[in-house]
Amino acid sequence: MGLRTFVLGGARSGKSAHAEGLLAESAPVTYIATARQDPADREWAERIAAHVARRPDTWRTVEAGDTDSLRRLLADAGSEALMLVDDLATWLTGALDDAGAWERDPAALEVVTGHCAALVDAVAGCAARLVIVSAEVGLGVVPATPSGRLFRDELGSLNARLADVCDEVVLLVAGQPLRLR
Image (cartoon, rainbow, N blue to C red; front, side, top):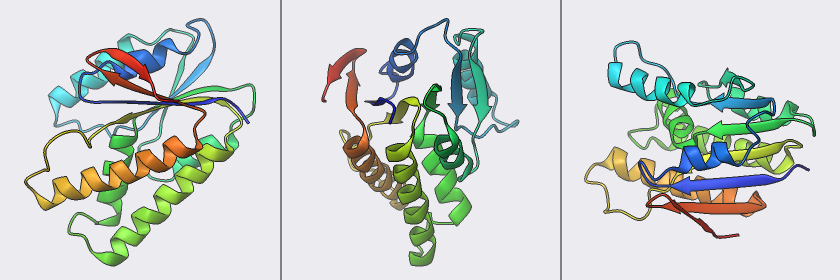
């Protein structure tokens, strides 16, 4: 099993940059991007471009916007691989979208639960050196909308399950890393 590091943080906390700094700049890292691109959303495209621009040339980006490709990439990784997943909040958004779970349909939520369980199993069994980034959404106010509460609850649950199977857990607060484990 490879070393698994879970990096959490709030918006603009520096979690992605910190996670990137955990892997050698000259090493051949596979950067697994989970965000789905939307050509109509210019601001989102600019955010993605900023992330891409700061990655070293030796890193290879793999788009894993669909729900199952992330699990497959982790399951297939060899022990010599270096992988960075950024981030699970966008992955979960896609899983909720694909399942049609935003209205809390029990069957749709069961599908999402299955995808999350499969992802946790893939992380637990991943042979690669793995760094995973996720948003910490449980420190703020209770969202005003049902979909906001659903997202916060689902991501909080997924984060807790992933923290349990990772060797290291780091929380970024105001740009400062706090080692939790």
